[in-house]
Length: 420
Image 1 (spheres, rainbow, N blue to C red):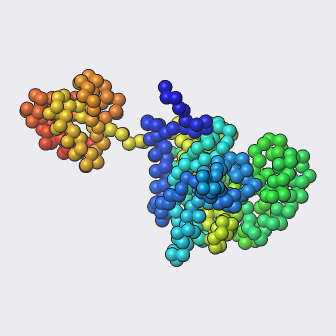
Image 2: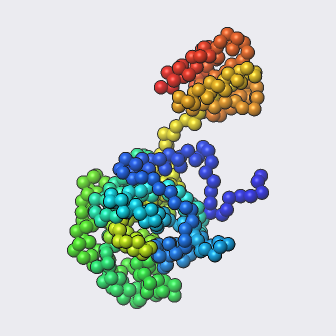
């Protein structure tokens, strides 16, 4: 037993379970790559002010959950709690918005960190795949991203998820709603921290998950009743485009998400098989975020999907992913000459794309064949001095048990033929 363990609220990804996580990441990324999104990778930590300004100083993420620290040089940094602010910062720093090809379409994959009470589906270190379309205000972009996420989930075989959709208005109509909501909230029985939040950003109160608060919000004014004509038309076009694509969704007038930068379109993917942590992903439009972090006006939209929670959702539905076999061929040498010959053949097999492994450590036939079984290989190549003297190896079908002698120089061609 090691002296050390993974920190509380974190996990290690190890085989064979890690294969499912890789498959989920690939499935989410595939439709993005086919739709003009280029890959971006940002540092695991950023200036703490980037998140305070962008995510919002009144959010739980910034006030309670962010891992912030000061470096030896006096810089105040934070482990990234989400991806959008970092991606937009990187795009602005690299002047991607000045290339003349807007929107800038980017996708990313990585680890994120929040100090939360750990429970199933909620970790202090978690994995996401995200996408951002920066620099264009177009309902078709909002619809595209929702459709691509739906496509990714369905390609994995996930079926029992729901898409919740809402509009948060813009700088024209949201102030009127904000004032009406504040008047309503100030009449409720709320604790001091929540009352402070009413003054800073009352929409955050709508996102409060405590039952004592939610019960009092039953009669709260709804943003949809305050939308200006432009926001209503924008939202209706998003709805029409998604519907025309055959993607089902539910209107949720109380959906606000947990970040301050959202405007207009906001959406969430939920799975009812995950209990209280039902959200598997979400996103929305953030037209003012660029200006919040010191950039020019760049209307944008994006989402992030949780890899961890998607894996849990697949398990809840009993979906078995069609994962590639890590090893197709396992070589078992008996003697030094066989080690030299079979090691070279394993290298040749790998060069033509066949997953091959080797019995390392000089084990005997019995122990090496046990390893071949554990590897999941379809075929084992066994060779000793007598075989090599005859210019052959023994090719064993691990499913049927059938064994055939084939020429040493025929190994690659024979296995390419058998494995397709």
